[in-house]
Length: 254
Image (tube, rainbow, N blue to C red; front, top):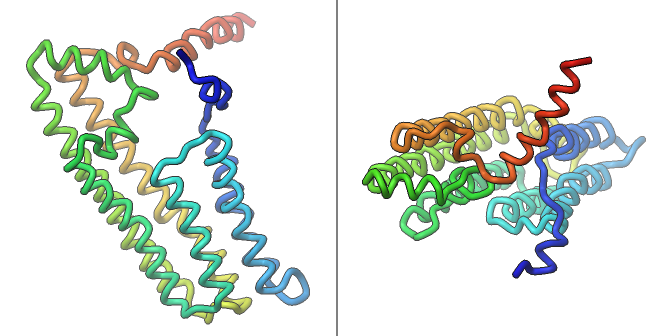
């Protein structure tokens, strides 16, 4: 039977532009432009600027019940940034924190390979994206389970490497950009600049590497099973794809 609470939970749909606006653009503008005494001041600019990504992260966690390790760590990360600024700790702690968060995730990815539930399965090879039961049945029938598991382990190592890259780049950016004492207008402005710069310099390359890892995993599945992507898409994605076809035809006939 379906849990009524689960049935009432809204389906989470990616909203990259809203995520970018709330988590990157708005906080950066507030920190860089409104930290002066004639506007919000150092403290309030930091509080209000970081309230956007922190509030958005909490909203996503509560509304969609996505209490996964990475999402929770992201919320903690924003909270630590605010704590460093409000408590006026040495700016070097910001660089350490920026490097530590992705390093912890990368370490968790590596440690998870020694468990029954490696994180790469949760994030890249999971029933919300692929029909894993159908894939596994085909792998068993063709005697390719061991080879696939070896490739999945490789994908985990590649996945951990993306977080190592993020950790190093986060530290370099923080040390390079944020050089003023915390609790000052200059610190807020530099923090906003770092947040803005981190997207093209860290987030986009990391996203490209993630796509490459998924492609590596998918090519392995395709080679070992002979399936096309549409053959093993998750059921809800297939339904959405089929539902979009009439509207596509209708729009093409106009």
